[in-house]
Image (tube, rainbow, N blue to C red; front, side, top):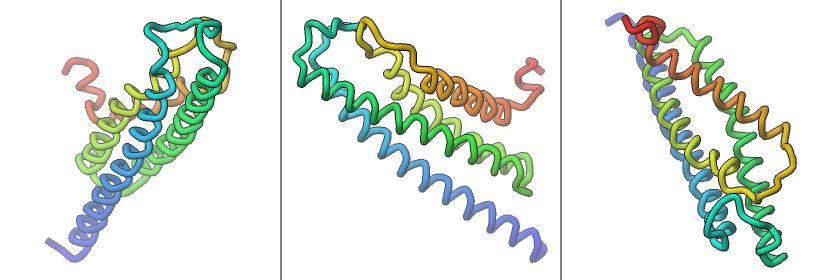
Length: 159
């Protein structure tokens, strides 16, 4: 192994370890927001729920926790978009990039299961939220891009 390839390998190992640690921290934030949201929707037996059947204080807590989860979703999606672009432009081998995208894809799948609650655990009448819709579309683009890079074009074409 040449010094150059050892340096590249070492840089990749640092990047992979750094990504792993970062994703674990971000999962901690997501799980924390999910726990708070769980408490805020504990009053509802089914969804969508009727706001008229909920006490004002509970409804305010729900809205506060929903906004916090929504803001986290927006922030995480922006960071993930930047991260996928950074991985794409690094000088790692295709297999190394695939490893990074695989880590990222695992995180994206877990995060999606939490963030989908913003669309499922809602009141009967919820005003249109264009920013949330844009974030959902951006999140799916990032997720699909990561999936494409893990599977490769031939994997998607069944080859």
